[in-house]
Amino acid sequence: MNITFSEVTKTFEPDITALFDISLNIEQGEFVYVIGQTGSGKSTLLRLITRELLPSAGTVAVGGFDLRRMRRADVPYYRRDVGLVAQDFKLISSLTVYENIAFVMEAMSVPKRIVAERTRDVINQVGLWRRRFMRPAQLSGGEQQRVAIARALANSPSLFIADEPTGNLDFHTAAEVMKILFAINAAGVTVVMSTHNQSIVNSSRQRVIELDNGKLIRDEKGGLYQA
Amino acid sequence: MTTFKYILRDTWRLIVHHWVLGLLTLITAGVMLWILGVTTLLSLNLENLLSRLESELVVQAYLVKDNTLDVEAVAQKIQSLEYVYAMKIYSPADSLAKLQEKMGSQSRALDMLGENPIPFNFEIHVHKAEDVEHLVDELNAMPEVDDVVYAGLVVKRISALSRISSRVALIMFILSVIITALVVYNTIHISLYSRREEIGIMYLVGATRAYIATPFVLEGTLLSLLGACIAAAGIIGVYFPGMAMIQANLPFLRNSIITDRAVIFRFCALLTGFGATLGWVCSYIIVARFINSITKPE
Image (cartoon, rainbow over all chains, first blue to last red):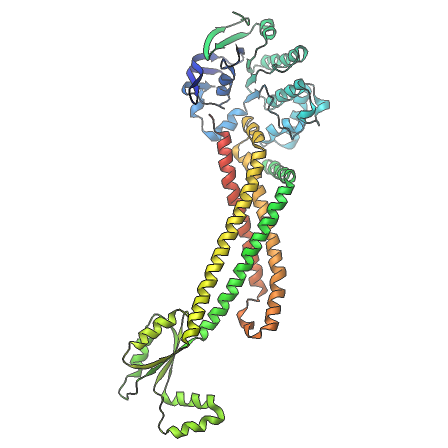
């Protein structure tokens, strides 16, 4: 799925401009880093793609479809094609690792047998099979992040949004998470990831979109963290 | 079918997760619906009793003594009045015979009167006790009617009792409905609030609003349904022994009490359906509002 921002501005009450006049295009299969200081608008940009937010001006189109025009009833179907990994993991604390991942497919009425197979596959993919009966609180930050990735992978999405997925992780665990994200991208999935991690950005040399105070100040293919 | 299984499982999880709150809701709903049911049944029985008394209320209209009077025409005139339910004409001879029968061995005293003093008269039954006063006014206004006899005070008391009984039943109905609705509403609200983060996550990863909402709506409906079942069982358990006791101690009420088991069971089935519907409506409203607010994009 390609993503197009056309002159997008997002303001919050009372008068905070989080993004100002952003125009960009992300092609299907690209790997894009969104960088910038805290409060530069990275999360707002990602939340506009997942349609948690609507632009105050301009349009955000995903797969050629203007998200503002999307009917509310269609939003869940859109989100099933968008894998989301948040910095705070957004796992359901009362459910086990297995249940956290399975329920995404259950919500799509996938038969139990297929849910079981697919859940096993994605848990194995992130290397957490032995932890499948544990609850999020019993896992380390890195493990929780991997559960969030497994959950995002469950529906085989065409677009993968990761909001600082390595923010709370040590170097070694962050490298493992990145390995998974590159593998997802290698399978043709568009990955948009916000990060503060210079070494990750510098080591992989992907497209870099840099924001500063809500403005797009750099959009560079094969870029480094610092311009 | 698969979705339905998942939803049922989630409903069960919700109930188990908040079992103390659920139990309290179930008990409160049960008690309130029991009060509603018992009040309604008592009111129905009272209505039954009053309507029996009303049916026995008679207005006796005596015509003027005039041989030229067209009794049939007067009868038709009275019959056309809106308050008249049934009417019977008594000739002077019939009336005398009736009086003699009533007096029994003392009826010989009537022979002393010589000529039969009783004129043509009508025994009139009304629809409702409160109609009596209006009918009497209309009869008194008719020149052909000489005198009107009726049980004035009894009529007034029955009318007042009937009105009070209806009002009390209505107030109890409204109160029970409001309290039950509020309890279910609050339980589901707490249930939703405690899982608001989870609801947000579910919506974010692609669960439809219906998929998220249905377990909460089912939880509310199920709690109300179970509460109504408890209320129905309580009513059946109390009503029949209670009525048997009343019949034994107050035999004159025997024909005024609803004792048909089929009627009571049907009433309880209705109450159960009402309870479940009430729970469904309350849960639906709060769930729709809550999920709407939580899933609305900023």
